[in-house]
Structures are given as structure tokens and as C-alpha cells.
Amino acid sequence: MSQEVSWSEIETIVKRLSREISKLPQTFPSITTVSRGGLIPARLIADQLDIKKIFVDKKKINSNSLFVDDIFDTGDTFNEIIKRVDIPSKLIFVTLFARRGKQYPKQLLYGKKTNNNAYVVFPWDKLEFERSKK
Image 1 (cartoon, rainbow, N blue to C red):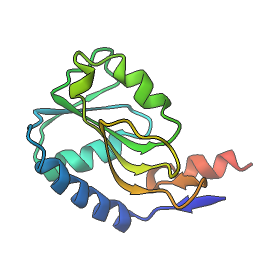
Image 2 (image 1 turned 60 degrees about the horizontal axis):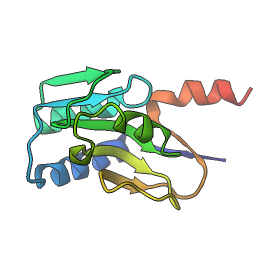
Image 3 (image 1 turned 135 degrees about the horizontal axis):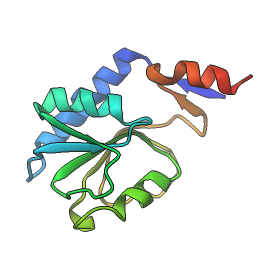
């Protein structure tokens, strides 16, 4: 079972998230992300917030950099990333979607909860999803 997400829905979520990020008491000179899944959402949010620097797959992460990914699912990416942050309590971890029914870290800011446990298919990974079904 899958939950397909349209570009229009992504754009709506990105705009809403960007407004929420703008309300935070801190500003972000950069965005940090992972290449698989996070790169496209990071670029979209960077454009909305006029952030010029995007760092990808960094071994060390500055807590003043906004971290962006496509989905908070198992928590594995968050748990790996938080180990790389200079001041973990200051990290803001932004995702387009958060898996319904999971416990979320206090640093998480998400756009929408998933409908259920279905695999979320983003417009940029449709081909990958199709290949996985074979």
C-alpha cells in the first residue's frame, strides 16, 4: 500500500513549513540535508526562505543550520544526524511528512502526518518505488 504525494501538495506543505520556520526565534544561514530524500525538499525550503547555502551529507553539522529531510519515518535518520550536530539541543529537524503513530523528538518540525503506515511516494522517487515493486 502506498500514499502518493503530488507536486502541488509538496508546494503547499513547503510554503506552510516555511512560514512556521520564519516564526522561530532563530534564523538559519544554511540548510543541511542528506542526498537521498532530503535534497529536493531542502532546495524548495531554501528558495522559500532565501537561504543560499545547502550542505549535503556532512559528517559534522552546525546547529545553526536547518536540517531538512522528506519524511520522519523510523527515526533512524534523525538518530544518525543528531550524533553529528555540535549542539544537539539546538537542532531544528524539518520534514515534509512525519509517520503517524511515532514518537517525535522535540526538535522535529513537520508539515503533515502520513495517512497510515503506507509507503509515501514523493514525485522524485516514483521510479524507485516502481522498481521496488518488481
